[in-house]
Length: 275
Image: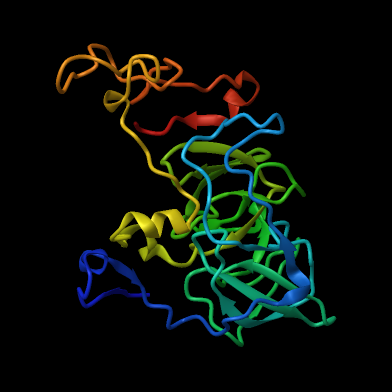
């Protein structure tokens, strides 16, 4: 993938950059794998805003992605590589030998026409192939990793994400997460070989606020620009600094404050991520 620039015929195009979608092979999604996607504007079932800065945006249809990769022992052929508006990575439409089609996350380097397979035994170490961690060699780059066997991938699914198997001991493998955290994961959990596609996405510049609004993101207002009733940093004469350590609108410290409270899974973390 490459990054393209635009001729500055307007102020919004002057600093805008985008992804060159030369690797995509299909503009229209596969209809049987589409679902309606309702917008909630960051509101809970009670109508209260629980996630700020959300709302609006273009209408989308959800693509059903196979995160479980439980089509075991049946080879599939990559038919298309497509854009997905609901995620940062690309997706691939796989046609299996029995005729079923499924979407998967596209690994970096996967091309149309290639064959992939998911199995409980060891298969070829090729991008897109899936198997339990016990059958993946040490040092291998993986993505779409399960935390519970059979639940489906939960880790390393965004564009350019990758994890690495460092060691195996007993029933667990030590995996270095994209955050640099090292965590124990059961050897029966599945993972997919390779790195997630579209790594250049982090380097693009949107160029204007309207492009962010199309994504369903509303403006983010600094706390120091608010009134005292709206934010702990608000109020003061002139450009006040807030007079306290940075906090959220509810008063919880930010910038390094640890919020993890799940003691049940603390034993699986070998090394915490660096701040």
